[in-house]
Amino acid sequence: MVDSQKRVVVCTPLECETAAEMLSSMEKAREEGADLVEFRIDSMSFSHISQLHKLFQLRTLPAIVSFRADSWNASSSEDRNTSTCLQVMRLAVDLNVEFVEMDYECKVGSYYRLESNGTLQVASDTNMAECVYNRPNSKLIVSSYVNGGKPSPEKLGNLIACMQSTGADVIKLVINVEYITDLASVFKILAHCQVPLIALAVGSRGLISQLLGPKFGGFLVYGSLGDKTVPGMPTLFSLRHVYKLEYINAETKVFGLISNPVGHSKGPILHNPAFRHTGYNGIYVPMQVDDIKAFFRTYTGTDFAGFSVGIPHKEAAVGCCDEVHPLAKSIGAVNTIVRRPTDGKLVGYNTDCEASISAIEDALRERQATNGGGSDASPLAGKTFVLVGAGGAGRALAFGAKSRGAHVIVFNRNYERAKSLAHAVSGKALPYESLEKFRAEKVMILANASAVGMEPNSDQTPVSKEALKAYELVFDAVYTPRNTRLLQEAKEVGAIVVSGLEMFIRQAIGQFRLFTGGLAPEAFMRKLVLEQF
Image 1 (cartoon, rainbow, N blue to C red):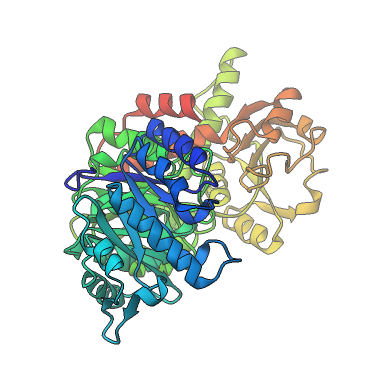
Image 2: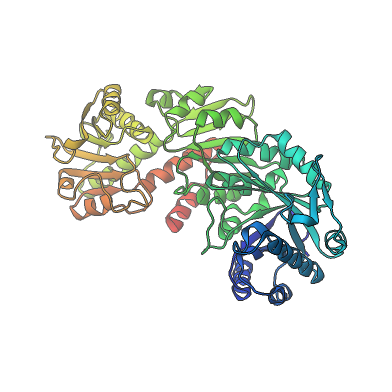
C-alpha cells in the first residue's frame, strides 16, 4: 500500500491495449522511479473481465484502477460500458488493488443519481453499494473533470465539498486550463484542502501543477514514461533527477522561466542542481506565459521569488517591474526579475548584456594572445558589430557592443524595430534583405540574436557560408542545438565561434546570484552545463 504520509508520491498513468503491455510498462515505470501506476482500463481491448484478473494479481507496484465508461468501446451501448465499468471496479476491490477511481459526474448510469444539492447517491444496486463502501483494502478516489471557464477557488471548493460527501478517501481534479494564471486557484485549493487531493492540469501550461504540487500539499504527482511523453506532464526521469521533488516543501521558494514557447529551456537542469549544491531551498520550473502582465497580477505572493524572462517577454517585462536596474532600463529589456524579500517589490535586471559581450571579448582576447598581441582595451573597440535580431537579446548585445566602442549595424525582419534599436545605440539599420551582401571596410563581428536555427528548425541559418568569410568572429545566441548550423559553417571558413551556451552559462550564473542573494557555484554550474547540454 502507498504510504499516504510520504511527502510526495509519483504516479505514472499507463494506457496500453493489452494486459501484457500494461505489465511491461509497469516494469519500465518502476525502473524509472514511479511509486504507483494508474491502469487506465478504458485504453485496453478485452472481451471478458477475467482477462484483467492476471493484470491485477501480477502488479509489481501499487496501482490505481480507473475506467472512464464514456471513453471505452464507442460501438457499445452506454449501459454495456457502464456495466463493464462496474465489473472492473468490483474485480479491483475483490483483488485488493490499492485504489479504485470513479467519476463524480456519474458516468455509471442508473447505478448512481446526482442530487440537486450535488451529493452522489447510491441507487438500489446493493452489489455496487457494497463495492463502493465495503472495501477494507482499497481506497476510493473520486474524480472530476473541470473543463472551460476560469476555475475560481470558490467553484473548486464547492465541488470538492460535494465530492467528499461520496465517501471518497482521495479527491482528484483534472482541470483543462487555458492560461497559466488559472492555476493560482488550484494551488490555493491544494494548500487548504482538508482531504487528500490530486490536482492535474492538462496541457503545456499545466506543467507546474505537477512540479509545484508537493509545495502546496498535493497527494501525488503524475510523471510519464520517457518513451511516452505527455504534453504538460513531466517525465519520471525529470521528477527524480532534475526536480527531485522529495526536497520540496511548503517553505520552498519558486523560481522559473517565463517564456513562450518554453519547452526548449535548459534552465531547470542547471538551476535545480545548483540550488541543492548550495543548500538553497528553491525549485526552478518552466512557465509557459501568454500575458506577462496578467501573470504578475496573479502571482503576487512571496512564494514566487524570482524569474528568468525569455522570448517574447523581455521588453514587456520592464513595465511589470516596480524598479529596474539602470543598465536594464537603458537597454529596454529585462531577463531577470527578483521579488525583493523586504517589501515584495519586483526588481528587474539584465544579465544577458555582460554575459554575451564578455564571452565575445574573451574569445577575441584568446586569439590575440595566441598571435602575441593583446591590450587592456576592449577587442571590440572600433570594429563593425553586425547584429541580427532586435528583440530582448538583440538589445542587450547592441548596448553591450556600443559600450565597448563598436559600431553597431542592425538587421531585423521588422525594419522599424531595427531602426529604433540602431538609433538607441547611435548605430545604423539596414534592410534584412541586404544582410547577405553586406560588407564593411573594418573587421566585422556577427552576432545572431534571432531564433533562426533554433530547434526544431536547426537546419536554418541567417547567413550563408560564403557570406561568413567576411567575419572575424561569429556569435550565436541560440544554444539549442549547442552547435548550430551557423557556428558549424563559420568554423569551416576560419572564423572564431562563440556558442550561445557560453552566454547561457554566464547569464545563468548572474541570475543565480540575484535569485539567492549570494555567490553562485560557478565551477559546478559550468561543469554541469558542459556535461549535460
